Each structure stands twice: as C-alpha cells, then as structure tokens.
Image 1: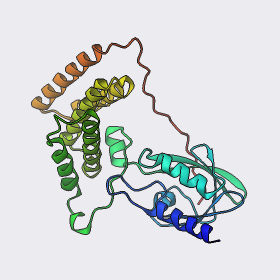
Image 2 (image 1 turned 90 degrees about the vertical axis):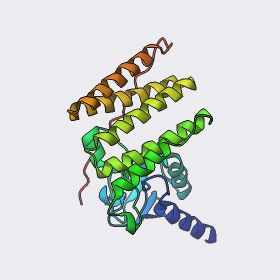
Image 3 (image 1 turned 30 degrees about the vertical axis):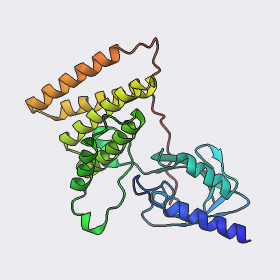
Length: 266
C-alpha cells in the first residue's frame, strides 16, 4: 500500500509539473489511478490540455501513442519518452464501455495558422511580465543568438540555437504577424542545418534547411519591403547552393505524420 501511494504521488507530480524551459506538459493538470482495465483519470483540471481535448474524470486510458497502458509504470515510461518531444499525443480511451480516439494538443494555434508550423505553446509568465510577453520572449531569443559560441563544440551550438528557436516561437505566439521574428526563425533554422551537416547528420540538416526555406518563402509572401525581399532572395539562393553541395546520393524526404482526430461527445 505504501508503495502504491508513493507511486500515485509521483504520477500527480509528473502530471502537473511545468518545465522552466519547455512549454506545459501534455499531461499537466491530470491525476491518474491504476485500475484493472487501465489507467483511470481521477481529475482533469479546467483549462489543461486534457480538458481541452474533452477528457473527463472516469475515463480509462488504454493506449498512449499506440502503446498499451496497463499500469502506472507504463504511464511513467511513455511520459518520459514523449516529454519535451511532442506537441500532440494520441490516446485510446474507454468511456461508458465505448472506445474513443482522442488527441491531446499543446501546440500554438497562432503559429500554426500563420506559419504552418506545430510548436509548443509558451509557458505561463510571472504576473509582472504578462503585459509584455512578446517583448520578454523575443528578447530572450535575441540574447541567446548574440552569445559568443564560435569556440564552443558543435553540440553546444546546436543546443544554443534550439533554445533561441524555442523562445522566438514563443514570441511569435503572441505576435504571429511579426516578419522580423519569423526571419530570425528562418536564420536559426539555416544555422542549425549547417551545424547538422557539419556533424554529418544529413537528414537533420536537410530538415532544418527545408524549414528555413519554408519560413523565408512565407516571409516573402507577407512582406512588401524591398530590403526584406532582397535579403530573403539572397538567403534562399545561398541555401540552394549549400544544398546542392551535399554529397548524398539520396536524401529521404522529411514527412509529417498526419493523424485523424475524432471529436468525442461531451
């Protein structure tokens, strides 16, 4: 009994913890208990990702991302696997003896609608900063980009740019029409592409180059400033040259898996 209670506390803690760097957890605001049929949802807090997905107290989770969930340790394992890696997770649940497919999403809708990119929503800011969230996040992103990392290992540079990218996307969430911020995103993706190529990680390099091209292309369509357009065209040309220099016989296309979501009755 003591072990079970300890496990229960651990689950609650994992479910409600918010990372200081990454956006809110997929399972934040949810409390679970172990049942014979699977993982039972004991509570779903209003406004949590699970609540927005239509989950309710009493629902039984059978699968997460196609993996069977029979116990609390199963949940802990899959939670660690997807933590900070996914902004959308599929579940199979039972409600009143009927199985439903449910998708929990924590991605930024403004960024998706304006830039066709699925990225995590920002974390909540302290009260004193809630009036200027864009300024706060874009400032953090820019400060990281100007850090001197020329003599640092490649992995450190990659981590640095990924962190800056995260903050820039947080800024775009609050001001999705910002061409300046989107151009910075395009620049960071290009730098990441170059760094991954330096590590001989061709697939990751091409993926980041493609995202850079996508953002430059989107900025080109949204802007009418001549200096921006010239800058964009120059960068697109340079990226094309960099890609043409990749000595690879075949580069597998980077595909985004599309999931079919069903709306469950409330």
